[in-house]
Length: 336
Image (cartoon, rainbow, N blue to C red; front, side, top):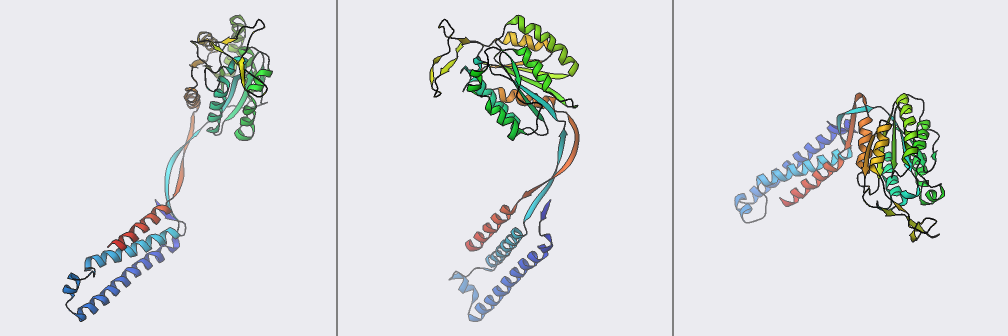
């Protein structure tokens, strides 16, 4: 529906436009009368550039319509439409991010950790009415937020940005997935919101330790009704060395064991899938990092329940269309 901010002046704009057309016709009539008195009008039009009746009429209409369009631009035209806005329940999402040394492997560009951070940040920037938390883990897990927050820019993304390569090299080596689950569950609030754990890891951990903790986590997840998603990252088909850097951040070889052997990392999707089954969650693997965006998006969409629908008025500024029409009509006036 077309509306105007200054709608009360609309009759004035149309009246002036009609007045311009009337004045143009009067002037043409006076000019035609003068030509008729001067001589044979038909011969004057034939041997000169004097416009015909129809051309003059079109010129007058073009000028009048152009002035009308310019006047409507001043009245600030708007197009108002109504759309259904779906109200969806808010979620509490705790991201559990592996920060062990193996996450620095570059089989995913720029590396596993940075790729995960980029896609987590992109997802969070698109959230609305949701709360997010962050747990990082290596040999032990740490919650970097005391509780999930809805302040994405000033709190969550700033803390996520602090988790970098220097942080990874500071924490003890290891991948304690079980401890990460427990820390994540302790991060959730007690409010009645749907709760989700998204754990992203390359999954290198001893099977016995993982199995014991995962069984306990499974029982806790059943009591708290938390949806769990485990996402593996890294190339599971090839072993990848972990880059070593000097004080300036330049690559200076690869990480080595005490015996001088290069340390290689290789994700094991089979083991991660077993953990997902134990905790009653789902598992997906991304070898290149290109699918993380779609995986995260699907998780959120799957868990967002519609709790209501309301009408929302959407208003668009369409002044540019009236201005463009006025310029086109003026161009037509000078062409005729």
